[in-house]
Length: 120
Image (cartoon, rainbow, N blue to C red; front, top):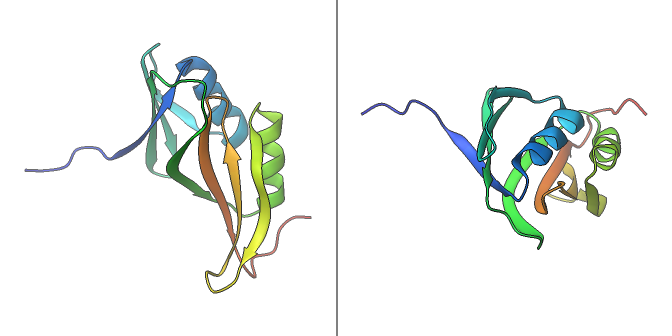
């Protein structure tokens, strides 16, 4: 047996809107697109949006390491998402961490390694 693909799935009430959020906020590229299942590529990973999400915010476990946490938070807001928890230092974890919410109510993490200079 051979694994042929690994993906991280998040639910979306509107798959096209959710895919547009990730393309606009993070520059993800489309691998496959339909109204019920869309796959986006991010640094070798596949993020799949599956039709069926509701209105309530939900945790996903999805996370992105970025080189500029404040810029990533700004990009989330500009793409129609929100920041649920502003960036904070995580003592002992070696990161600054924020919690974001996409256009479909999926909570995800944004992290920047401590000591990595941002562009600001």
